[in-house]
Amino acid sequence: MPDCTDTITIDPELQPGACNAIRDCLRLKAQERITIITDEATRDIAAALQCEVEEIGAPHSLFILEEEAERPLTDMPAVILEDLAQSQVSVFCAQTQRGELRSRMQMSDVVNKNRIRHGHMVNITRQIMLEGMRADFRAVDALSQRLVERARRAKKIKCRTRAGTDFEGEFSPALKWLKTSGIITPDKWGNLPGGEIFTSPLNSNGVFVVDGVVGDYLCQKYGDLQGTPLTIEVKDNRIRELRCDDKELLEEFRAYTSTDENSNRVGEFAVGTNTACTHVIGNILQDEKIPGIHIAFGHPYSEHTGANWVSKTHIDCVGRDFDIWFDDEKVMERGKFLV
Image (tube, rainbow, N blue to C red):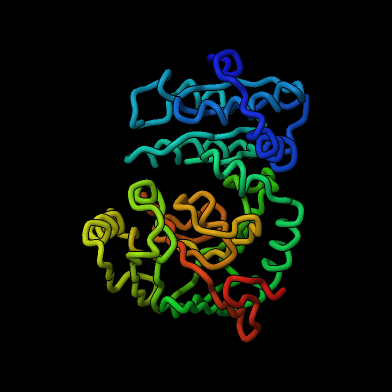
């Protein structure tokens, strides 16, 4: 377990975001233990996080994935999972590689079982540390709380965009809305930067135009889709038709959402709430927090939402500049909240 700070020069520009992550979002205390998981490509950000941990005085372990196993990972190394199970707080701060979702799900299983306050900084970049991670997360949390209270009362949420989205979700009290605003609790680990509310919809129908980004490894490959948007037609919560001028993206997305019997099923319906995220940067970690709607096909986070089905895949889809209605109440116009 090498010490990042021994080999990496700390970039002072990263420290405000690292401070937010460790002190405001994860609220690490000196008597708590934290596990930091990183990789060679992200060691500078991990070093900034570790610097904050050392200032607090909390005991910690740091793992660099390439030093524990060959990548892409088939499984999360046992030594990491064993260490993680001893901690009260954890951070995954690394870049994704194709085929590694299984290993991250193994990590989240340990996090969920042990109620660890976990910050998931998958594909984090310096730009995100300077933008989304510098949000006032207490303000983001207050906005998220106002919205989630309205969402829990809503039977339907409708969204439209000038790019052609006309999509509606139907919701059930049996399926729980969650708030992941960046203030992380033992009840639900969260992405950092945080800033969303989400659930698994009872049903959804319509057209969703992805003129922002798609998730998982496809995000790194295709980036901002504004010039070649992906149009998804959904009927009864499943993909009915896909259209895109970029035929390679079209076929890769089709293959991804055909992986298992539920890979083409809408598993997540979410509203981004991080007002520090003002523009698409081509990275799903930040772009899904932009104020607006994003949906995901595949795993519905059933362990948290209460959905009664699962999938081995999960891919987010982000659009731009939404009008949104909770039942008949308009809560957003052209990407700006009205609440």
